[in-house]
Amino acid sequence: MRLSKMYFRTLREVPNEAEIPSHIWLLRAGMIRKLVSGVYGFMPLGFRSVRKIEEIVRQEMDKKGSQEIHMSAIQPAELWKESGRWFAYGPEMWRLKDRNEREFCLGPTHEEIFTDIVRSEVSSYRQLPLNLYQIQTKYRDEARPRFGLMRSREFVMKDAYSFDRDREGLDKSYNVMYDAYEKIFTRCDLKFRAVEADTGAIGGNASHEFTALSEVGESEVAYCEKCELAATTERAACVDSICHEEELPLEIVLTPGTKTIADVSEYLNLREEQTIKALLFVTYDEKGEFAEYVAAFVRGDRELNMTKLVNALSIPEHAIEFADEVSMSAKTGCVGGFTGPIGLHDCKIVVDSELTKLKNLCAGACKVDHHILNVNYGRDYKGDIVTDIKLIKAGDPCPVCGTPVKIARGIEVGQVFKLGTKYSESMGAYYKDENMEDQLIVMGCYGIGITRTLAAIVEQHHDENGIIWPMSVAPYHVIVTVVKTSDEEQMKVAEKIYNELIDAGVEALIDDRDERAGVKFKDADILGIPLRITVGKKASEGIVEYKMRRDTEKIEMSVNEAIENAINVVKAEIN
Image (tube, rainbow, N blue to C red; front, side, top):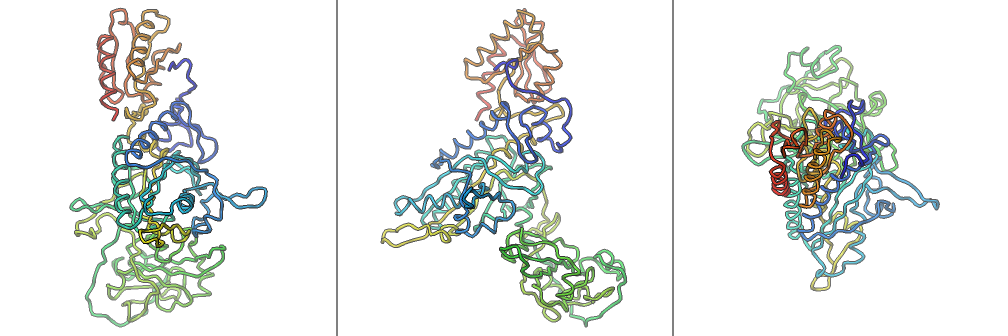
């Protein structure tokens, strides 16, 4: 392709909206264009890289026996109501009606659609196992779209669904997809880690998230260097501290103005871990109406894990929010800044499991400017739900081996789920076994964010000058830069290199624009084409400059050497 004919425009300044490297460089390279907040289009160079990622995904999925289909993004509401997710998915779902007032949504995912297909067409155990996938645009109405392609409202995703006879079959399908994902992200040249994850709105009983390591990622991963523990902080279990002190009698104390854990700890000369923290919430039903008040309690120095809390309450994330303390006080007896578990009424009390193993803690007295000392679980209060609802943090003991865990940040680029019979049971997806008896189909689902993977690659592969594309996903492999297009000898040599590369199957660009050399070099760096061959003043001597984008070194070599080296490098690096 000739840059003089290509539709592209690079930017010299950082766009005001761009905050992270992938967003900055994809915009500056002219690879994406913003339509509205969270919605982006792909320009020629960017779309080529998207298709490269898609093709890697397609190849690895096909190798595993998965079959590609393509379903509509418009989905009828009745299927989602049948599965029970029409409410559970919440405000992120884009809902619409046709002229006849029939309800639809723009698909954020396709479990219901694929389940409907299979229940209609699979009747015998002989038709299983089955794995179907698609690469398609998805829609989620993010409350705060940000970071370009990282959290957008429209994105391209590969979603696959496996259908098996039993749990053993699901385990095999899950492992096959897990292996495919490792190959896909390796071919995309990502540094990644597969970690245990929460199943969220998708559901199921097990999941792994494939996380591309990056400091700008929204996922936090807890991992242990001494054992195999690796999980998102949402999912990671925490080790409870234990205290064997003798229980002391309750003592109400005056604590004026001490509304925070830090304040009361300082006032009473206590460590924060000797206190109980209260967090107050209100939950809503499927109609969005008030359901109940909830008081959650954790150790004073701990942070509440909201994912664990909503799982404990068996509600979707959108059905809970912090309560208005005044309104809640009138109903439950709580007091803002001085709430404790003793004396509350008419609300659901959720207690972190650690509190049941500690002794003589300090809690709010549900009375202004007062706290209670020596609070003990069982004797003084009980919870309606007792479970782990705390957030793991760096330095906490590993729940497997006890070694202090570490925390890393990353970008979720893929996730695999063991759905079990969640959808087949609610939607009636059965098969006939050898005895002609109905059995529920056992399902798994497997997603890869294609466009998010593109952004993750740029996050890991860039420098202060622009993108550094891995060869496997680069929009083009080689750019031939002509220093002076008015020089016939330079153009002749450049055309020879360009044509021979194309004939050898190398995807090549030729920068034949009537621009200054500095502009061309700057653009080549921003675009991130892996290999640049510069044709300049030594063209008449048969000498050109050869440079890999990832290296600082520039090497002079003969035209034929440059061509041969380029072909060999491209073939070696495309996996």
